[in-house]
Image 1 (cartoon, helix red, strand yellow):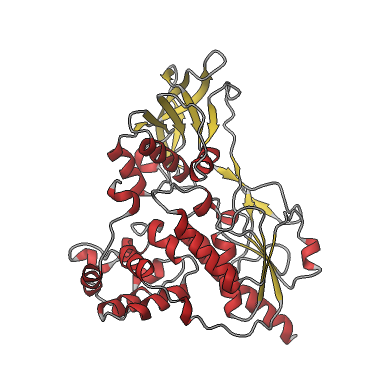
Image 2 (spheres, rainbow, N blue to C red):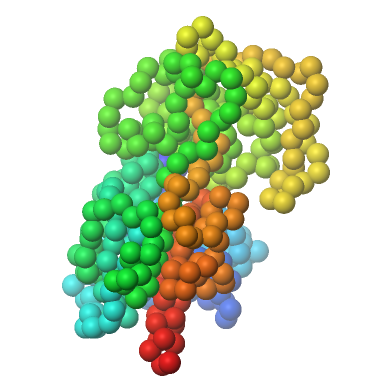
Length: 424
């Protein structure tokens, strides 16, 4: 298995040596950069002193999805990006020390929770954000009721490639939370909020972005056109894939595009995998680690190429694109692509996969939305008092760590909201 797929495994000696490199900064910028506000300097201090159980208990209490994070948290964008040690030599390998703990020490037997004597709270969605909210609410004595039709665990358990994130890691997180922190699971789909407010004191919406954005060009009806997330789910479930042929094109420059590209190249190393992206390399939204890996394993890129038409007689034979020039930056901070006249050319393909974005399902008509996601205030509350939202459904798609952090923050804000109501 390629090293970066799963990350290297630390043994005790290496973990202690890595923890000893920590400068234990007074203001710990790594902790501020972490969406979950993991007590990094404290758990590294414990590792340095070989208190591995204590360190694991600390991490376990702070993060609902500790096993998942040990594999896929993008440390190079978060804690590592502000690590002061990098000014001396290189940043601390925080995720790897974290994973050494979660892989080797089980602290469930030390779990101690207060009585479940507060109100029932409805949580719509059983992914990282929803289960993180349940995790935190239960620690405060609430009764979290999770509404989820699909497998608990969300995108990590349903879509991320097994050799990058083992199914067992997220299953372990989800089962731990359900066993110890969830009052009830309801296998039903919720499309309106009002009925829940008649029974529950507060509601947290964490349904993610379940629909994929459609590419609106000619030829989408041809055989051989697929959606990235549909294929990722098939791969995760170990189902047979359709015949994609030997030259597979992927449209997009985000994490989903890189995930399907790297997954297919790993599964089929002799096939040509092409990412077609309308902007440049520096404008890609995918994790730097995954972009670097794509280049290393042989994924090819067509930058500054905007799709115009899928060509073929009954099936995909190629895609016509126009070249672009990158001009002034848009509201996202990235350079805006503009078509270059008479620059069209055809890229020969045997199949095409779209990965140009995700969008919210058409539910909750009473909830105010903005730019395709649910609008919330600084407390993660929607336009309806007592209804909160977090995760991808409010940010358009971000890291698992951000989703877990939103769930953690939402639990705290729900508690504050209900305590104020009790005091009235």
